[in-house]
Amino acid sequence: MSGRDGVLVVGASLAGLRTVHELRTCGFDGAIRLLGGEQTLPYDRPPLSKGYLAGTVGTEAVQLTSEEELRSLDVEFVRGVHARSIDLDARRVSCDDGTDLAFDRLVAATGGHAVTPQWVRDLPGPGVLRTVEDADGLRGLVRPGTRVVIVGGGFVGSEVAATLCSAGVRVTLLVDGDVVLGRLGPRVAGVFTDLLRRRGVEVRSHATVIDATPDESGVHLVLADGTTLEGDLALAAVGSAPTTAWLGELAGPHAAPMTVDRHGRAHERVWGAGDVTGTGHWAEAVRQARVAARSIVGREDRTTHRLLDEVPYAWTDQFEVKVQTLGRPAATDTFHPLPGHDVGSLCFSGVYSRAGQVTGAVMADRPQDLARMRRHLAAPTRVSAVLDDAVASGESA
Image (tube, rainbow, N blue to C red; front, side):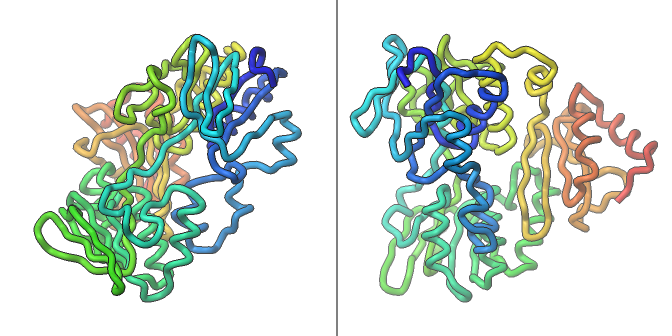
């Protein structure tokens, strides 16, 4: 690939691969080069904290593609190479193996990396969970009775806690607020905090780690209140940061997300998709990848407009309960369960509101409500209209 008539996709992530697929689906017949920093084929990250960590699904189940499919897509796949810098004027990306890659158009899909606090870096084990290698390392170190301290109660931290607890591991989960899954607001997050505790996870609220040391007996974590915790392993699940250092002026300082417009464009010849833009969720990475690819080929049709207007969606599995969310509600927004829905039952749907306007929705083990909730969030909607509609339609738990 000369690069002067092709697309360079930097990052063999979910977003990177979906960009490739959409380019070909939309009829792009130029050269495509996919640059991946890991030695593996592109793989799916959500199972790493669930089925893959538990050992119930294997490597093939998390792979997003195969060598055969990449050949059928006529993609040059370069693995084990990281982008180090970009020269927009010369239209060239410099890599850590000493090579320079030319491009006509470029999609940045380098995703994100786990935030790694200083205190976790000298401890045994992977310390964080972001890659297949991390999951393999953690799984190889735990067995029933192993004491694991997880710091961070977001999606990854709570999912890992549930997975390990189900395997007989003794889990302590430290959160800096009152509850796990704090973005869901205190009422909803509270029931999942209670679920973790009922299943055997020791959840400690308002706990901040300031130091940790290893010795032959395990790890010793010092908390901000002066108390000390002991375990065999510790895992930091305190979020991720976009991998944007190589993008220079296209991203701000201090690992800021890449700034893109509604069509994923950051520059005349550069687009971005996925975690590199600060999205943080699987479905949004897919949406952005498809939008960017369609922008590159100039495809403006009904599908493009649907993608541009798609309501943000995310999900998490908390033990056997699948939690789906729509929109971008703030933790301080008011939560309204649908009439007849009992939040404590862990089978419910509801909406969030701010100043009477719907800002988001959550469904716990209620996949049948997803389409209706999408419609409610597709346009500005008063919360009273959603609740009235639920009564009129006979919707109940």
